[in-house]
Length: 413
Ligand SMILES: Cc1ncc(COP(=O)(O)O)c(C=O)c1O
Image (tube, rainbow, N blue to C red):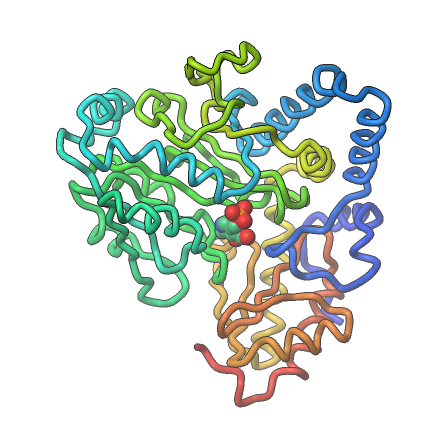
């Protein structure tokens, strides 16, 4: 067994709180983070409140819980609770945000002026283009592919190394017709970090907005909203926030609210939600303007259990331990003769370590038969140790992986 190398070994004490870690060697947090017992307790409280209070639970408990959830998410990304928009999925957040770009694509003067007031000098011409990349999660591009009938053009920037995106590739793609660049903070198959600060500067120089899908980063990579200058940040609780499905969120730089007015909406976005005025739509001044209908309160309860742990430990320590375990995995995989598709520098990596395997599914199934849970994407076994994993678990994974991958299948695809 390798000697321990990862910082913050004390965090292993949290393992007792995550039942899944007793059932398997779980190294698939980039797909679904494990659940803490705190989530079960909060879900029980939700059910009890429902049984005891009925609809009074809305005012006495649940609206407060939703505000608490906005506060937790805001604390993790460094934004006030009021700037968080709750959505049921990243896709839903993106759909609402995409709807706000329609007038900018058409060249609506008033909206372009509002963008300029927010520091993004978009000029006075239509900006029908959206730039995304070949490494982004499909739902990002799909929002704008679905708008092709409205005249929107989607440019998909290829990755020259199959792992990351260079600034030169973005420089070539972003022009005076680009309204938005929509890409990831951490790419979901390769684990590479995007250079968000440089990308935000480039976007703003060319009059475009930068949207970041941070699903694979939130909880282990600081959001650094003001340092990087990103304009829109979307993410969810399913992975590195240990908060389960059903809760996602958006943050839109408040200065952009006047420029980005949604046309896909719901009553939670209304400034006077409980006035029940069918003939009036004044959007909330805060992040709620990008919300839809009733959020899933049981999902919120579950999510808050995971977020409590994340807030207690802090993104810095979570990120350090996650990347240290990634370093260990990379070193052991090298020694075992496995082919890595991972980014080697810890500073350029999130929590995903992909290992090249020509036909990964049978390998992942075989490991699952041994109680070791990882997943796959085309041409790679995707491994993602989290803070609660041990060095021994990482060692066991590499040992079994090396035994399960035939030498001829160890190729870079
Ligand atoms: C980077 C990234 N973005 C988006 C998603 C999907 O988000 P949702 O299902 O909430 O729309 C995922 C994974 O499920 C992802 O890894």
